[in-house]
Length: 82
Figure 1 (tube, rainbow, N blue to C red):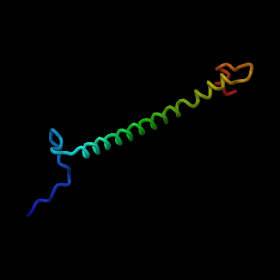
Figure 2 (figure 1 turned 45 degrees about the vertical axis):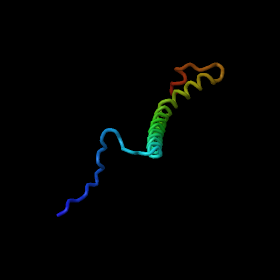
Figure 3 (figure 1 turned 180 degrees about the vertical axis):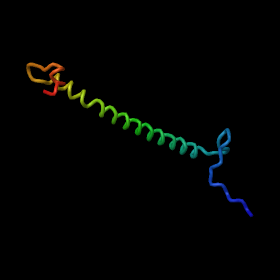
Figure 4 (figure 1 turned 90 degrees about the horizontal axis):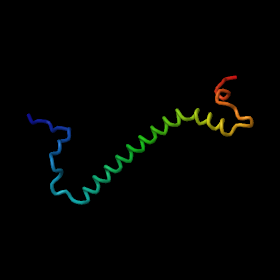
């Protein structure tokens, strides 16, 4: 019986590819750049979501204190439900 070929990729040894062309190196560099851009955009969107979630109410309070009518309300008056 013949053995089945493995579907797992073979690990690359030290030193990379022998005889690789400059075009292949540029493609791999471009692939790394695209992957890093995706990681950074994902991280940025997750961080923006957290900032928007936790910063919305404090932003409303600050705007209420700075743009409020005369006499300006105190922080306690802004936070009290009545």
